[in-house]
Length: 211
Image: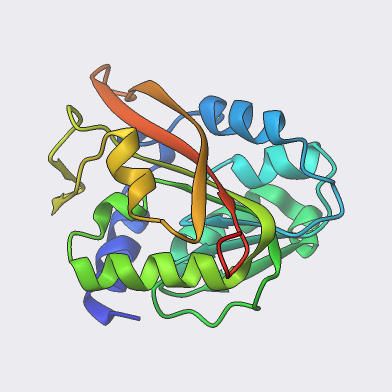
């Protein structure tokens, strides 16, 4: 875990309320639409990468998922989510760490969700580690739902540069372990009223021999 990166995000979350962060929305509507369409069995393990204080965990629990993990660099952000969930927090596996270095169980997750983590990985080696982590942790037949800034989206977020993607480019980075199931475009309206274009892809984990 990078101490500088962790400090950056702890500072962001510690200094701003939910409504003061550009990425906030009450519910991750597009993520939920794509997840609902997959009809993942509720007993299967799912993980929200970069979940922080996002309400996706609340909505997953409300959908009766009973093996939910949340991974984030910022313990500050996850502490806020835990406080919000109250007694439900004990139903969630909370993991503080960098997804590119975290030790995750092999071939474990039926669903891996990420809205707005991958686009912060502007270094090719970091992207490769992320892809390897997802390939190692998602079980055969499982799915990855990932949202990044679109190719006409913002170039920076929270003072950091980001990479921008169209659906084909984003999906190609995860080959050959994942194949594209579908993709979509979402325009997020920030709390300040500006618009940010997102690219979403849904990918399916294939077998290791790519058959």
